[in-house]
Length: 305
Image 1 (cartoon, helix red, strand yellow):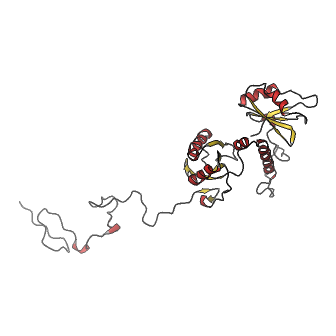
Image 2 (cartoon, helix red, strand yellow):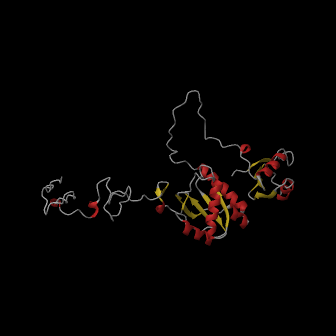
Image 3 (tube, rainbow, N blue to C red):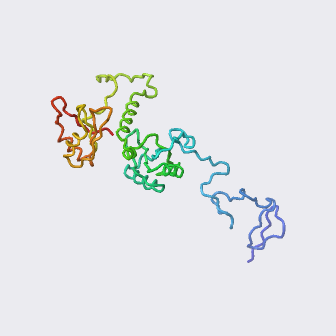
């Protein structure tokens, strides 16, 4: 038995649809919208041939501008850099979570693209963490590295690259003025100790703790006797008349001896360098009670780094 034809929908024009055929669109709604307003409702597929909107994309005009990379609260583009040429490059804003051997190897490989790298120095202490020094054979290679690697992203952090302000140890040894260089470094270190810390004039004391006496004066440094071993020994209480040859004769009896360095302006101290810290420790222990005459028992400790 055939079905009676369906009545046309309200406001529709034209002939009625054939039995079982699809209903025509509501003519009163007008043509379909165009442009970005033509996107289908959420959960519906777009019409055939239409591009898919990017997943999770915000509406136009709602994308926030990129934030500039910062170091110490200052954008990298506004950092004040040292422009006085040097053979050593100072690198900062390094990723502090990368292990030191890995970081040094990576830096040497990267900076060797621009010339011979003599040495890479980096430390793990709090004051020098995230920094390194790369020593080149000449200033030209250092300039190339600074130009090409400025703000280069290494281990997810953009590097800040500039000339180092002071000479590297490897250059001082090559130039033959290591003793003066080391003495200058000691002076700079002492000057830093005497400089007041920011806000030091505002004496804000913490509340007193019951049963714990407040220490008087500055916190003392680690005594020389408890410094960690390294390959350089520091000699004190030497006679003013002693010669470098006398010290060499004494210390070269121990394996690994390299050299003796004396400070021309202060004859009572000297430095003795060995190949390894194991060899320097053996010499330190073996000569611990040695005396140059009754009035000069020499004091031997590891040099401060």
